[in-house]
Image (cartoon, rainbow, N blue to C red; front, side, top):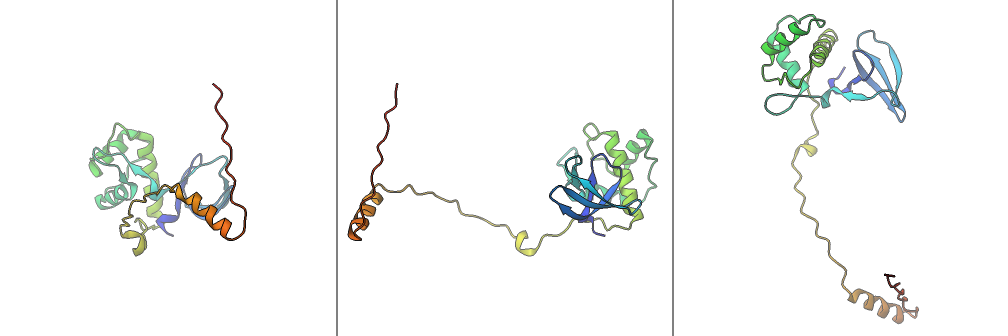
Length: 177
């Protein structure tokens, strides 16, 4: 199971593996009970774990960095029902987190998700881009050239040489004031 295929679904607890996506939803498999089901995109939103970032006192960081810090700490996970214990845990494990903008409910959710990932032995890492996409593409600015007024005269000449009638000018309506 790849970390890049994991999603969180609004309104549903836990994490899911994205099996297939459709125009009106997705087929997902729960990581907790391994059940597979269709989830409608009309009712639910999907968030790839790779795209979720955490507020810190500096720049926002990807959740992978937080999970790696939790893994390195090696401390036992706090009870996800005790908000104070969860906050103390994150103060030890990842002190750069902005605790004013990251809610206690989000921290509890991260503890639950990390526990699920550990139980399913998911390797927590971002997917790598192919080498072609990693290189910085420096595009030159596109300069739009305005067509010259002589172009219409050239069209008229080309049309009369070929025996076709010259293109007609359209009359412009005067603005009524």
